[in-house]
Image 1 (cartoon, rainbow, N blue to C red):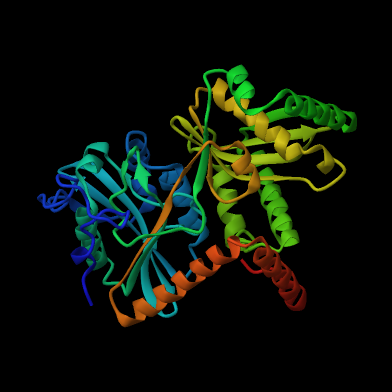
Image 2: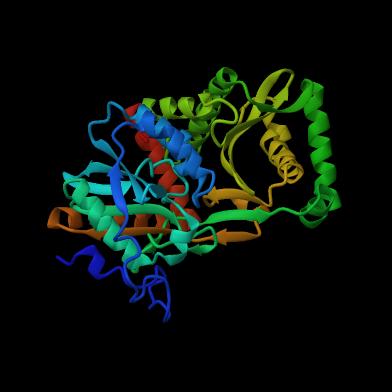
Length: 412
């Protein structure tokens, strides 16, 4: 079976890379790098956090996110972290947060925590990213596979097509789209300009009416939760809301298992200023009725997980009120982009003015790996087919609800 390095010499768009493109016929820009697997994650934390301040990446490659995932999965015998630091001399230039998992008996190399990360990939020095092409990434990953003792296949899921405005070298030729794109809206210089561009007079009036009616139930306040203990309690409540809403709709529920709850609890308990997580809440009468877990990413605010209480407040759209408030907060704090991350929810279409492709790169190295990847590809294609038809999607949700009723449980 062909080695991955033999095929990763074109762009991730399925066509040939233009002459002079990064990595096209050039010397390997990663061959001289020294690769060192991380044995003690806590000991590597200081260097990791210092590097992430300057490197190109996303909040999902931050030390706070990755370390929380590793700790939450400490008893997961089917997943072994493989975190690799790449050095140019004594200087860190690349961090690869990877894992070896067992899928259908196959050893699969993948991004660590790619189940919950909306954007998977490396932390990489910009100068290296400017030089690095898919062929370089392929040769690097071949070295990583040797460090791992081999793998049957590689599945790099939910990768942004671009990193820091440059083509992502880990998106290989033959990569295929994830089940959805990532959406965002560019923020204006002032709240007044943004409001005028995205909300007409009727919309603004309706929002004021909703907030006024909500205030009749209890005092309305918008807050950012910075206390780690309060944030952990509220994030657990937010995840519970999200699980209930997904179950009610008949959708897949990725947050139902104890590992997921433990993971989000650890993300939330990270002290303010020590990680990218931010929790915002709309409170009514002193209790949170809508919340949003966001991540600060330089000039982007990533809107990751949102939910609202189902009660007498629901009719007044607390989730929408909080979202609009967050647009204002993001503008006031100097963010330039409000990133809805990946997903096909209707409200993202309503507010977004741009979308980025999210890609999946896969490669089998053994027949067992080929079988495992075929199953994964079939699952994603089925999801994409269901999403293309509202009638089929509604039928799928009804069947899921019937199945849950028959088994008496929720599966992630």
